[in-house]
Structures are given as C-alpha cells and as structure tokens.
Length: 421
Ligand code: HAM
Image 1 (cartoon, helix red, strand yellow):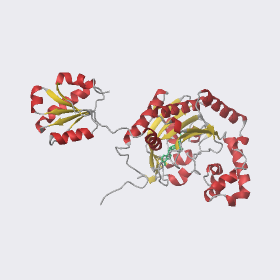
Image 2: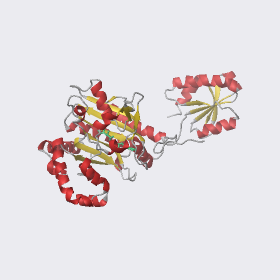
Image 3: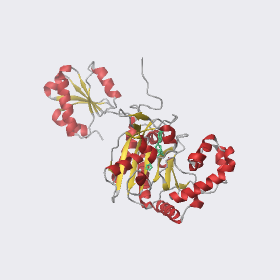
Image 4: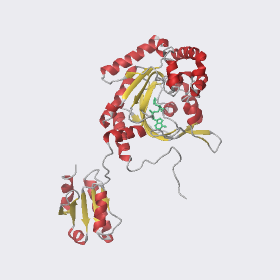
C-alpha cells in the first residue's frame, strides 16, 4: 500500500523550493522594507468568520471551504484566505482602534477548487493589509510594494496591473439594481453560473468567462455610471498616484473580484504565461470589513500574492536556480574521524556565517564520497583521513577544476572565504 497527496494538494519538492524561496524572500523583503509587521494567524477559524467576512454568496463560502466539526460540536473551517482572519485578529487584540496597522502574513490557504496548473486546494499566500488609512495613498503604497518584489524577481515585464473601482456600497447597490434590470429580460441567454448569480451575486456576472455572457454584457450599463462623486474622486486620485509613481496599469471595468468585502479600489496582477490561472496577486480596499466583523468602523486595504503562481512564473522567466545545497563537502574516510570532522565543520560554520558545510556521514570509498560531493553542488571537498587528523589539516579539492591542496586548519576558513562568493 502506498499513499498519495489528496487531490489538489501537492508536495513542493526540492527541485521547486529554490524558486519558492526566491519569491518568498523578495516579497518578505518588500513588506519589511515598507514598514509592515508580521502577524501569524491560525489555519482554523470559526466557519462563521468567513461566512460573514468573505460573504455567503461567494464561490469560496458556497462551495470551496473545508469544514470540520470540532469535538465540542462547533464548526471550524480551514482558512480560504487571510484578510478576514487578519481583521478578526486585529479586533480581538485591540490593534485597530484609533491606530494604523500594517500587517503581513505568509502561509497556506485552502479552497476546494477544481485543480489545474496554478490552481490547487492548498496554496500559499503572502498577504499585506493596512488598517486605519482611508485614502488611495495606502493603496498606491501597496502597489509600489508588490511592484518592487516583481522587479527584484525580474518578472515585472510579464505582469499587467489591472485596476478598477467598484465604488462605495451605496453606488454598488444602485448599480446592482440596474444590472439586474438589464439582465432580467435576457436571463435565458446567460450561462448557467451567471443565471444562478442573478439571485445571489449579480455583480460577479461581470466576471463570467462565458463568451456569450460577455457579448451580452457589452450593452449592459457600465458600473462607472453609478459611481458617486466620492468614489470617482478616490479612483481618480489612485490612478494619478500610480501615474506619478510610474507604475503602469490598465483600467479593467469588468474587474469585480470574488470576495464580498471590497469597496472602491480593486486590483490584480495578471500574466499570460500561466494559462488560465494568470492572476498572481490581487487585492483592494475593504472599508466595511472590520465593522462587519464586530469592530469599530476602520478603513482597510491589502493584497495577497499567490506564491504557487509567482513561483511558476519565476521559474518560467528566470529559470530554476542551479541546485546547490552545499558550499563545502567534507568527505570522511574513516568513521572514527567523524566527530573530528563534525567539530571542524561546526567551527567553520561559526567563522563564516551562512556557510553551508555538509559532513558525509554515509561513509564508503573516497570515490563515492567525491561523487556525492559533486552532486551536492559544493565548490570544495575537504578530505579527512588519518594523515589529516594527526596533522590537524585537510586535503582540499576544488570541485570545478579538480585542483588539490593541503590546508592547515588555522588557515582553512580564510582560504575558503577567499574562494566563495
Ligand atoms: P484572492 O484573489 O482570492 O484574494 O487570492 C489572491 C491570490 O491568491 C490570487 O490572485 C492567486 O494568485 C492566489 N490563489 C487564489 N486561489 C488559489 C488557488 N486555488 N491556487 C493557487 N493560488 C490561488 C484574496 O485571497 C484576498 N484575501 C486578497 C486580499 C488581501 N484582498 C485584500 N487584502
């Protein structure tokens, strides 16, 4: 009997983790250098938090959450996203009242979606949320932050920033009524999903991928026509800031997002390089969320980057970084010298911070240890045998050129450091 991952869940294998690390490091650097604080949130929350926060009529709540019954009968769900949890935590810990918070989190999210390339049932997000700032400057700062990471990764040229405003709650109510009025006589022409959404979440119909629904929407009233002056002004200022910051964007009037908490600005970075799942990062403003979850009215905005997708894009654009887990490979000829070798390795790691030193604990012939040294990607092999130990030195072999020299232990760290970047 062998076991496999559940459908839609996957192992991120050593061949893929270097791209993941690159992507996570670039995003973590971006949030940290923009003054955000880290928050760690539980994987399980009360189901009710997401029902209310994300919205009863969203795909996520309707059909994608993993539920489990707690032993005391309460209903818990694996988190499908982080914004509702983050707002919950902010309220619970009293972080939001009359304060500005900039928070980031990194971790897995769970959605029971149909798996395909770039869409998984467990996926990783890095999220950044700003609480307590109402103006579009906070949104522009978030866009700038993410753009910094895309630039650092070298994937910026393959991403398009799409922006839209879905207006205030009042503007959206008025628009929803107009859209329903327009679509009602044409309901038979809509795809099945959109027909269902007529009753539950008509705005999401704008997001339909169905070509005939899209054609029908050509004549629908534009959302923009229902925007109040304040919503219009907010969106214009947001765009002006992006222009001034030289952050290219396109306005996509059909961009509505799949979570109910958004107000005003919404945005997504998309790529054409990943097939159907081309949205690598998305977010927007959610001024009503904190109050909806029982806190005092607090404006908020944020985004979440899908690490799985950014890592796929990074691998496609930048290639897979050369696999190397080791800088220095210590071959040990006799097991009675293993402790000596480990002690020296430990001293080396202490002297050269970050140096990756692997001590071969598997033994065997020198030839097979050197073969493993080559495969490890190390620059140096240090050979430890009877002669070396008794003279307190090592035979050091450069694995690229094959050159060999004998180095006293006192001189070793300096010699290695001069040859490793
Ligand atoms: P979202 O659009 O649902 O927004 O997800 C954000 C990103 O997570 C997506 O753009 C995508 O890259 C990635 N993602 C979503 N679902 C999957 C999946 N099944 N497999 C792989 N990647 C996926 C949110 O979650 C909001 N909480 C974002 C936000 C934060 N808005 C404001 N603050």
